[in-house]
Length: 206
Length: 82
Image (cartoon, rainbow over the protein chains, first blue to last red):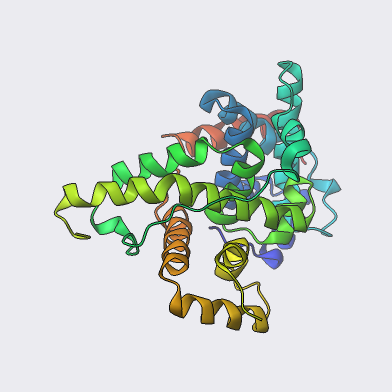
């Protein structure tokens, strides 16, 4: 994760607004990943997400003078990215997956974790990096959007609960509930599959 | 208070993030000492969290950053000062 640095950001913004616009590259660079993956999560299409990410960066530049500094810079940037993504979904006539699912969000009941006792080690040594990456990506992409967005920002971009709530425009309580459910779904999905991999890699867990 | 497995599962995510209070943490720890199933669930959930955070599972498309900054240069040129 790119660590946010409010003093650096404030200084950058001041100087960019005073005319040193090349500094904008350094200001936006730490946010690039989060912008792209938030948009990919919303739009489900790499080319579209990349274009939307570029539009987001341009909008951030054009609106920089409106940044008040009462939220973190990255939070503000991500809310612009989110609006860009939702605007595109509206244009495509796609019903918003997250509002649809939000209705059932509070009603979904208990979950049962994958019960297993032998997968305890982190298997990164046992699995080819690429295979592991593909498995994890597949599992995350398979989550419903409202859960995927939260996992992406909290567990992948390592943003805190407050920042995630602000970027997604949901309550901190909803962030926690969704993160919990998302992790449970991932555990249920991944634990048996990752365990199944192990014996073919030399029986490290046998 | 004795807590059961289901109760532990409900708090696993908060437990991993260090967001349960001292009392509940102690209860969960006590349960984990004797419950093989819950400690396996905790370990595997924790593994999932570590794996998806640590391994840079998600990579930006090749050339993403170059294309972004090239376009920004062009747009900033057109737009003038921010």
